[in-house]
Every structure is written in C-alpha cells, then in structure tokens.
Image (cartoon, rainbow, N blue to C red; front, side):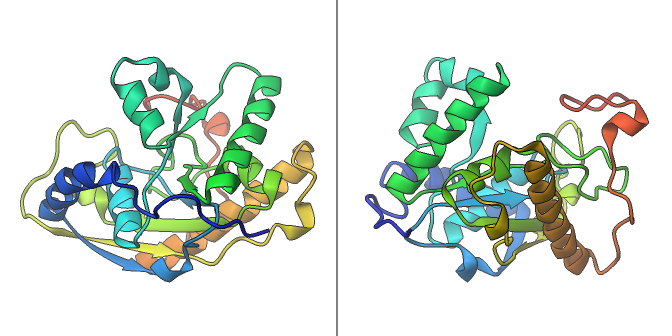
Length: 251
C-alpha cells in the first residue's frame, strides 16, 4: 500500500531549523551523498544508519534534507516531556521511543507505524541504539526497534552508512575538531532490505532477530564500500565484552 502524502516533503516548520543547521554543518563537513534517490518521496520509510559519533545525527539530518525530505528521528520518550524541547519534537513529527515494557513498546510501535503510513513520513532509527562499542567503529549487534516499525505495516527498511564524521568528533570526544574545516564525509543509502517473507510476524523473537541481522548486514556492507575494507567476520556484542548496552562507554 502506498498512501498519498498528506503534507509537504519538507514542511515549513523545518525551514528555520535548516537555515541554521545546514550552513553550520557545511562549515565542518563536506558531505557527499550517494543513493539519495532511493528514499521514497510519497510513502513512509524507516532509514537505519550506523552510529559511532555524537555528531553523526547532524550529518544524517543534512543528507536527508539535501535529498528533499524532512529528517525525523526516533527519540527517547523522556525528551518529549522536557518543556520547549518536547514541543519542538512533537511539532516536527519526531517519534518517541517507549522503554517501559515490552507490551507498551509493542502498542506504541503499532501507533507509530500507523502514523507514518498515514502521513507518508520517513523516520530515522539507529538500530544499534547507541554509539557502537566496536573499537574499530564497525556496526555492532543491532536492536529490533527499526525492524519492528518496518514489519508492522510493510514499511520499506532502508540501510544507510556514513564515514568521516569521526574526524570532526570522535566517539565520546569532548568538543569538535575544527581544523581543517570541511572535512570529507561520505554517506551512502542502500536498497531496501528484503523482509517481505517476515511481514505479519513482528511479534516473534526469531523473526525480529532475523530481520535485524539482515539490516545490520546491509549497513555493514555499505560501510565496507565507504571504508574500502572488510568488517570483522563476527559482529561486536557488548555483552560478550562485559559492556553496558546503553549509555557512554566506560574508559
């Protein structure tokens, strides 16, 4: 099903924000985007990038904006309760993440998916859930949030990889590396991940694991292209290395 979009691809509310963010990011990063045409223009989609720098959401947002679409992220539910910030997040159509219980999360996924389909909106979801713990910045084990959202209503699940942002702000680096300006950053958007055989089964753990594995494989393959090297054969699992799944990585 491909619904007709009920709003502008880049709503008016985004333009003042873009007028500030896009020029500032352009001072620090020379972004080259490949595959922007693969983002749907009049239907919902889930865009899933790799994540290794606290600066890379700005790179992803600018890449999506340059593709002619409004960058909407999945954000922690608690942020929507912050005065002013919560209003901005709701006004721009950002998607809250429920972290209370599996039942609550499942119900909210259904609601979020229906809203995306209704409005023909895309949403950016980091499947790793936090900055990668892999010491060489390869994608680590993914979580199921992105695939849950995509499987619920058959929404295209699109992988994305970016590389070069670490030269601007390394993982957990305090402050930015400003010189030289306009460091090269490459972004590549891939073909939708085929999960058609898994649709209608988003409540099954084995299905979610399989869909997440396919997604992380696709993201990793794109990053291999950008880095021109092979990723490790085994994806980094924080639990196997005594690391927390969320929050900052301990030194």
